[in-house]
Image (tube, rainbow, N blue to C red):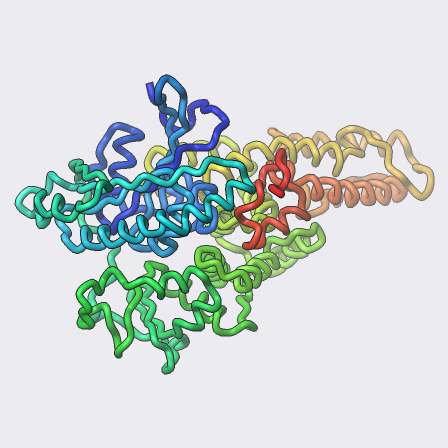
Length: 550
């Protein structure tokens, strides 16, 4: 019998199926039906991270809103790890056909039978996919296989008419489906669904406002995020991003009939709806137009903005802006112990700089999904220093979040599956390293180098024992924050022993810091810096047991 994700699965390349379609088409309902054999009774829009975001499914665009689940099935008597990804709204189309077609073994184009325009858009996209499959995709795959030695299988495309239980409200008849399917593929399928129209669709044109900071009179395109419009130059954006170049080269699905009225045009410019938050899109566009633009991360608002720009700069493959915003976030979550401890010192002096706990998880999750992994050890350590004292509450909160999904309002900031796994693995390793390497002079009686001879050996030994007893009573399960502050202020030893202990603690902190990425099951600090560069995203395995792909 097939089992959902979490069961043991063979170590093999997953068979990847990607579901695509307009918002409200019921893609997530199809995914849920297959994985869990149940229908969702209410509309639940795709939100990144509801299930398990998988970076490898479409490596260049990890934070396009998507839900991913895996299931072990059996085909011809052999176990196969099937990975199904549902992409949210038109936002998932931006990289078509190059990225999705290359990364998927099968593409399922899903539309609602209640929306004839949705079917038109899918037919148009099917033509683009087939044209790409006939030429450029085969050429690209042939080239990749000479390097990676993996299979060269062109993706299969299936067209799915969904929400057939909509009753009298149907707007696409089955004959129309058949008439549009003039080619041997895609196969036409249909399934009932109980999804409804999305509540998150941008509002009518009467609610639109022009951005005050990103509105260039010489621009020839208008980007829409939420209900805010940004006038930009297509040439400028195309030079900064191949994704925008592909996007502007394609005829917009919303203007099939050459209609320049309504929401598709504004002040003579075509409107491109990106489904990105307006404030994040504004910061992203500012960064593209101004090479000196830097986000100073010093409060919760600027932290969230920097994370949003990081996600968009990764999604649209703008390398320079991405590295700039990683640099902004690295001020808060740095790669060196000295900088990390300086941040803690600043937070202790100025409480206004202390970030909301949920924003710590926001940075850690974004660092994982965008592959900005140089930020990850510091962010996960900060998370542990905030929640590590109560492991049972941490696990219970994530269990509840997994069971209840978006309906769960957690007191604990929730991590992605990969980050939670890293935190749980690292916690015991950090406890051991803190006792053995940082405070080993007391817990393990490790000899320390001292400039002199202990003046009161018996008394200092008794004081070490008292200090260990106080630490054990304060933190019964062994967890305490090992790096952010020195815990020697109440150790009443002689001056020689205190100086030797202080030197040993500082050297032990350096040892722990150097080993910190490995504790989180990551590669070392140097290679984390390398993997954070966009140009290497598709050629590097971040797990510490693997080496870079040549």
